[in-house]
Image (cartoon, rainbow, N blue to C red; front, side):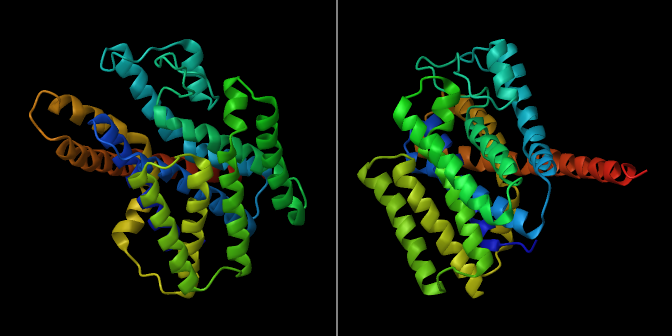
Length: 335
């Protein structure tokens, strides 16, 4: 597939926004709107999965295996580091249970024993988003069994049914609380944008720039004015941002920015690894008379650099290794 630079730029900005959110939070600052990078990621995920499956048809099983191969190995490595760190005392506030570890590794939502409020977090806290991603992949793979003309409608109906069920039954179990949240509709919105993109039915560049400006202004207003922060407010803004970006891309007026493209490529590793570096930075500087803004800045830089290093030394080698193994299996299977 041709690289969509706008999507890569948004992946980079979304990852950096989450890094800034966590760095500010750990250092006593406040940048909650950075967490909206997750909403942008979910819309992008729906967009990418739809366009990939349309341009490169794949069986449901192959799709599911490819997604697991892409997401799980790096996540399992970081989770293992967190577990070892907790065992040897590096994370004194982390409590481990067998069920929590197992649920974390299998992408099953479980309540964290380390929190007083019983938040539904895995061992690696930001991994909560991967529970949603895996749920989306499972539903998407199931919809690949449908005729092509019915897939988007079928997927939309399934996700709407989950959200409506959540509103009706008021679930309390971690599984249902997770999978009935309206945030799952962001994947559907991304898939719809993918269909619009492939059919050429996206706005012109002028309207695309307007959508980007409206989305960014909306995010800024939520941060500055302290407005409600949830998927109901951030989801539509994320959709507008992605639609605006791909509209500008369609016009051919989007410049090539190698640094942002690279950060987009490494965004998954940045997302997974950044909190390890931020934790170290905050602990090292806790006894120093350093302003919180400076600690936040150093945390952002450190978290981003660690993520890039992990991308080069862990994610890319693993991806190439697994890709080669998959290729060998596909070569051997006919014989």
